[in-house]
Length: 104
Image: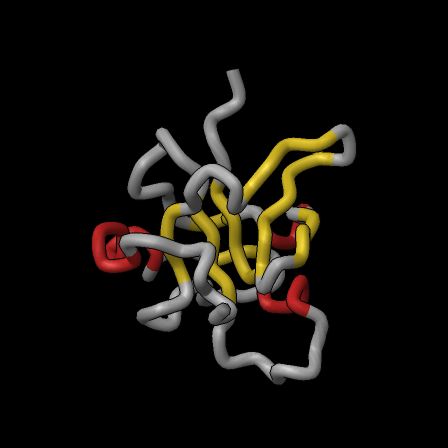
């Protein structure tokens, strides 16, 4: 399983992803890191939102939320996950940016 298997349709949202920044990084998009998440690749828990990366459930922290840019599609969550990070590091360290569903 690749590190970014949780993302789909990067090209559909690429123009929006290139404007994304989070507290973790000033540039979330590396032309392949971002995409929408399908059911089963994210979840809401009592502790907050989690994204599945390399089979591991990773908490979405404040530092991952986008502080610049907008979601290409607010009907599903989107994430940027670095595929090129050191393979020995924990999968959760790969999460760069996240845009969830609008709060109702």
